[in-house]
Each structure stands twice: as structure tokens, then as C-alpha cells.
Image 1: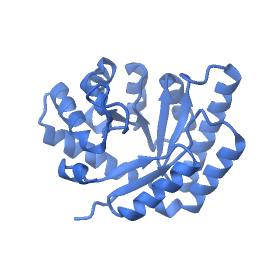
Image 2: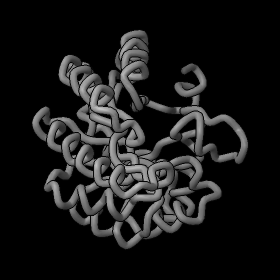
Image 3: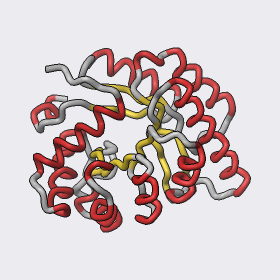
Length: 233
């Protein structure tokens, strides 16, 4: 936390992937109130109805303490069976409906399923959406961005050609930055952490040909608006 503050990170949104992680994230947000914020979700590989119901109850019970639902979405990297992928799609639509019902944004996981996740988001009609670490084609990202969907650029943009293409194709007004700690490090093989966020800011600035301060200002504004966060001065 100290390294994050020292590097200029104004706030952290941590996304949970299951019920237990959600409880831990809530405890962390209480410990670092006004600095750590929580999104409660369930990783798309968890398809058991009991897991889904437990996380749904957790979200509803803590609606006033969280800033988003997520991570939720699709994962075609680990889930290969067509029947299970169809179940993922139905559950994803259910999460989007719950988010709209509770007036919360959604943080979307879409590993190896970017096109299909975007299609579902656009079909749902709900636009308070952040595509996290999107690994799909630029064309689908552009369609979603035109509809108001945000894309979060991880620190791996430092070496990822796909992420660099995404930055080049999308306007700053559609972007945010993330680390996805402890993975997607700007330095291959090293454990990632929030303090490394500056790497994403600098690389986006380089690609866009603008000062890092401009990238930081716009991506921060986007995040504060989507998540409804007011920074403590």
C-alpha cells in the first residue's frame, strides 16, 4: 500500500473471484477505507449454482459498500465444452441484469472470448461496463467503445503487442489503467503490484504521443465516473 501511494496511485479497486475472496476484499476496504474499493464477482469458470447464489447474496447484502460487480463474464481459455460455454453466457447475462437492477457497473473477464463478451454486453443494452484486460480483436473493442464501454489497459501493455494495438485504436476517453496484480506484470516473470500502474500510464502516453500526466488525468476521471468514487483530499 505504501509503495502504491508513493508511486501516485490515488485509489485501488480490487475485484474478487469467489465468495471467500469477496469477504477478504471487504475486510481490506474497511482497513484502508477511502483508498481500497471493492468489486464483488465470481470467476466464469465457477458454474455451480451454489457458488453463484452465494456471491449473488453477498453482492446484494453489501450493495452500499461496493463499487461494482466483477469479475464476471466468459472464459473460453479454460472452458472448452460448448454446453458449459452456453451456461457461461446465460450467467453473464444474469450478472449484467443484476448490475442494472442495483445500478452498479460491471468488470468483465473475457479471456479468449472477447468477441462473445462484447456481443453479450451490446445485446444486453447495459453500458456501465469495463472490459478488463481485453484480449480480443480491436474491431470488436471499437464497436463497444463507441457504445460507451470502457477498456482497462494492464501494465503488460509494456510488452504486449495486442494491448498496444488496442491503445492505438481506442480514444483515451474509453480507457482506464490496471495492474491485475499479481499477474500481467510490466516485467515478465515478476510479481505485479499496484505501484506498477505507472508503467501502463507511460506506455499509453508513448503510443498516443501525449504527456503521461494527460493519460493519468483522463483515465482517472473515467474510473471515478464509472465507479462513482470521490477521492478524499
